[in-house]
Image (cartoon, rainbow, N blue to C red; front, side, top):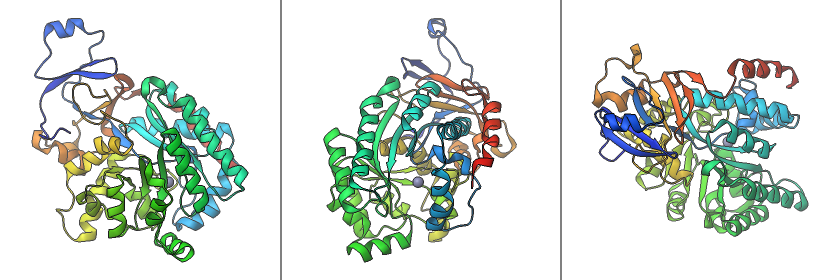
Length: 422
Ligand SMILES: [Zn+2]
C-alpha cells in the first residue's frame, strides 16, 4: 500500500509490535539467527491487515433474523426488541463469534459501537489481541438524567481503557444518530468529546426518509445541523453518509470528518448508494465497514471491497470511477486514518505490524503475477483465502488455526442461544 504500489518477493522483521525491516529477497543468515521465531510464508501474499470501520458486534446473533425490511421497521421490530432482552452471556458469545469471523477473513482492526457490556467487551478484545476502537452507543431518547448517565459511562470507558493493550484499544464517544439523539444531547456529546479529547462516531444520513424527517423537524439537513451543534470540533467518523449533498460534502472536508462506507448494509436495507467517488475526489477520508451481521450478513471485508469497487461503476455507468488500488486503500490505511490510528495499514518500517497472509494457490486466484495481485485481492479473493493473521506482530490465526478462540465451542453456544430471540 505504498505510493509506488510495488509488490516484491521479500521478508519482514517485526520487533516490539512494529515492522523493523521490510526487505527484498531473503533475510540474511544473521537476521535469521537473531530472530526468536521464523515464519515461512513462501508462496503467499503478505499484506496489511484489513480495517473494519463500522460494526455492532453485540448483535451478531441476529444474523438472518430480519431480512428484507427497511431500516426503521427493522430497528423497531427486530433489533430493539431483541436487544432489550440480551444478557451478558448473549453479547459475549456474539462478540466472540464476530471476532472469529473477522480474524479468519483477515480483519485485524475493527470499530464496535454497542450499548451493552462494553467494559466486558474491552476485556475480551484485550484477551484475544485484536486492535479495536470501542464506543458505547448512546441513544438520547430518554430523560436528561439517563442521557448524562450514558455520557458518564462513555467517559469512564475512555478513562479505563483508552490506550490499553499496548495501545491497541481506543475508545470513542458515540451518540447513535441524529434521529435518536435530540440536538441538546448531541451538543452535550460534542462538549464531552472536546473536554476529554475523544473521537466521535455516529450514524448520519443513512436513509432518505431520515434526512427528510430531519429537515422537516429542524429546518436543516443533518450534517449542516451537526456542524452547528459542535460535533465536528473533535475528530469525527460518520457511518454511512448515503444521502449527502454537495454542500454537506464541503462541510465534511472542511472539518476533516471521515466516512465509513458500508455498501452491503446500505444495499440490503434499501438505503441507497453513498456518493463515495465524489467524496474521495473532494479529499474526504473514506474507510470501509460491514455494519453488523444483522444487515450484511457477514463480516468478510474482501466481499465488502468487491462490492465497494463494483456498485459505483454500475451506478455511474462508468467502470473507471473506482479501481482495485483505491479500494484496497479504503480497507487498509484509509480505514486506519478514519479511525485516527497512526502508522497503520501499510507494510512499512516503524508501522504497526498488523498483517495477513493470503494463499494464492486457488483456482479463483490463478493465474497470477505481480501486476495482477491488487486486482485479484479486490475482484477475486475471498476472506477464506487468508491463512495467517498477525496484530502487533502476534499471531491470532496461524496456518488456518485460531490461536485463542475455541471456534467449535462458540459456534455451539451461538446456536444454543437461538431460542431466546423473538
Ligand atoms: Zn450501524
